[in-house]
Length: 513
Image 1 (tube, rainbow, N blue to C red):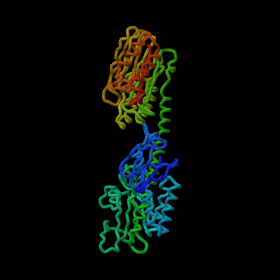
Image 2: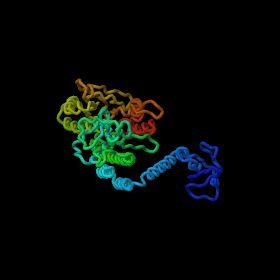
Image 3: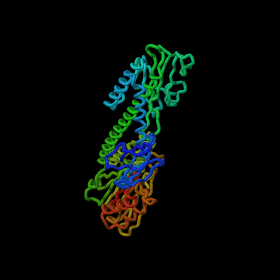
Image 4: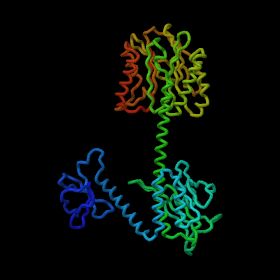
C-alpha cells in the first residue's frame, strides 16, 4: 500500500514502500475509487476522507476472501490523519501553556505504565486539579450493570461522602453531563450566566464548577460516555476559563481510552479465569462419571457423555450391588453449565449412598429427590432420571423412570424395541410413582438409554436426529459389541450435524443383558 498526494497538477508519493520512478496519472476528476495499471500490476486508488488530495493505493493482489476493502482502508487512514490533524491543532492551541502541555505528557506517562485504572486515577485527578486550580475534584465511572456513576478517585474531599449517582437522576449535573455527553459549567463572574445546577445545600467554597464527560469511541464506532470529571472550589478567581474546558476535555478523552482498555483487560482476565475454572470443573465432573470397567466382565457395556459446555447436566452412574445386581442410572438436568453441573454432582453423590440402603429403584429416586429439594427449588430446575436394577443371571430388570423419555429394550434376536415408560414425573415436579419389572432373555436383550441432546440434535440440513435413528443402529448392529454400537451412533451423529458444536449435552449408554 502507498499514499499519494495530488496537488492539482501532478500526483506525488506521500508514504509507503519506494518504487521505480513512476506516478499515477492526474487523479482530478475522480471522486471515488478507480483502478489503474502500475509497474507492479493493477492497483486500486481510493480517495482518503478528511485529507484533501490524498489517495490510498492498494495492490489488487492483497484482495481476496477476508481482505479489507480499499474504501474501508481509506476511511481508516482518513480517520488517522484527521486524528493527527486534530491533535496538531490542540497542540498549537496549547503551545503557549507549558503547564498544560506538561500535564498531558505526565498523564500519558501515567497511563502508559499501568493497566489498572485505580492505580492511575488518583494521581491523574491530582495533577488535573493542580493545573486548573481546583480545590475539589472527582472522577466518576459508569457501572453499566447498576446503571450508576461510581467514584473511582477524589481530590480535596472524603471519598466516602460521595454516593453513587443514578444515570437517570434528573437533578444531578453529573448524570446530565453523562447522558447528554456535553460539558456543563458555571461561571459566577458572568452576570448573564445561569447556574444549571441545584445550589440548595451546596457546601463548596466557590460557586463555579466544571463537569466534563469522559468519552470513548472505538475505531469506526460511535462515541459512548464512560464517566464524568467534576471540578469545583477554584483557587483564586472563582471561574474556570475556556482553556480549562479544552484542557480537561482533552484529558478526559485520554482517560476514556484508558478506562476502556482497563475494562477490556479486566474482562479478558475474568474470561481467562472463568475458562480455567470451567476446565477444572469439567475435569472434576468427568472424574465423577464411572468408567465401564467398574462393572468388570459381568456385562457388555459401553457409555459416552459429551457436554455442550465445559460442564454439563447429563450424567450416568454404574453401581455394583449385592446379590449380583447392577445399578444403571442416566439423568438429564433441564439446563447445562455450572448450575446443572452442581445438581449432577449432588445426584451422583446421593445415588451412591441411597442405592446401597434402599430396597427398590423407586425408593432410591424418592430419597434423591428429598436430598435435592432445596437446590431444585432455588434453581427452579428439574431433572429426568432413569434407574434400573439389572439382574443379568436372572434375565430381569426392575426400574423406576422419572420422566426420562429415551429408555428402551432392544431384542438381540429380532431387533424389536420396547419403550421403558415413565413411572413418575421428573424429580422436582410433584407426583409419586412405582417400580416396574421386565423379564428378558439372557444375553439376548440390549438396554439402550440416551438423553435429549442426542434425539434433538439438529442436522446440518435441518431436521432432528431422532430416537428412531439411534434405535436403528442398535437393531442393525445387535450382534456386535456394545462399544461398536456406541461408536456407530456417535459417528452418525457427527455426520448428521456436520461436526457442529452440540447445543445440548449428549449421553448414550448401551448394555447387553
